[in-house]
Length: 490
Ligand code: SF4
Image (cartoon, rainbow, N blue to C red; front, side, top):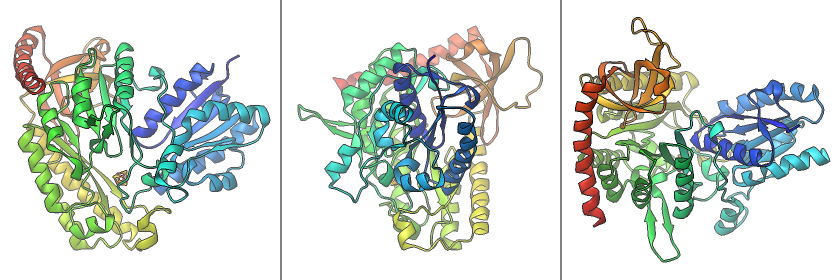
């Protein structure tokens, strides 16, 4: 009988995508995907190193897996991803029952490593070179490109998928472990990306999200000397039939070029949504983070995004309690959040990571309770901003790509017949909840917005009559965008 593998994923969208790619290669090698631990022969943990909390959870899970492994013969435990790259020795010491340790640059070898661990009964380790161990080119080579077939069963749904544009990062923000564990920044060849999107479209995928640690710094010099930027990729993907929505995350503020903003404005399929982490509103903290921009630059960049793309929604990330962040510094961050009009912000407490410059150079001198208080304060400001940003949508009609039944039961009165509370997203990445049949999942439907909270828009699906009227408006807007495309391509 085919061995069954269970994959648990922690961390960012890169890991979600990596798990899908690993599942695809395991299925091709004859493995089946297990729905849970109880039925699995192989358990793989795809790990994250960005925060200590994530690592602590993995070690706790590995403790439980020691008992799971002891209960059946031939069971295999694997640790994949960033922790495997960063802490292979530590994992061996703390969890000697682990059979496979495989860094993110070696995932193409997962099948081979599992087979060898099963055959030989000895632990198998595959990691890439560390940044200081060899030249940039040698280190880059040791992070293998990985372009296997896509595995829809590993995605939350078949009509949305991540597509990688780059590996690694060269920015070296002082708090961040990513450049060490994911290696040098390398852009994938555009023909590989386009082939993957075509394959996804053939599988029924409607929305692709292009991912990269700094996706807007994508740059590839083709054999004919042509330089491909992210904007060029957007134009090329836009031409592929079947794909109706295109997003990209995450952007680096300094690389938000005008050609990219104009592509977002021009291309009807590209979502009017930008995620651009600011991290702090204080120049001194930004300098210590080595973010390579000032608050003034960031504000100017926001203004340029909004001038170029009318109606664009922008979200951000912030770290509170970074080394040396005084109350005054923090108040500057509060001011930025209060004024910038972000749709939402992801706010994190600073967590020192061994292997980063900040860990070596600066004292983690903001007490935990101060970090917690600043986190709550900043979140409260963002929630107020989000609520007023969301309320602007009341009385408007939006197009929602329906993702399925809402996991949260929102109190919105009685639900009728076979209807459920559906959730989906707009072209500006706003979450919308409305009532309808589950069969709408995967469709794009017009929804009239009636109410809003800090996190969600609530609406009513428009009936066929109003739907046609709405389509009229949408097609007029789309045709304006299309004329702009024709003008640019011509
Ligand atoms: S840009 Fe900075 S925060 Fe983002 S992955 Fe690179 S080093 Fe980390």
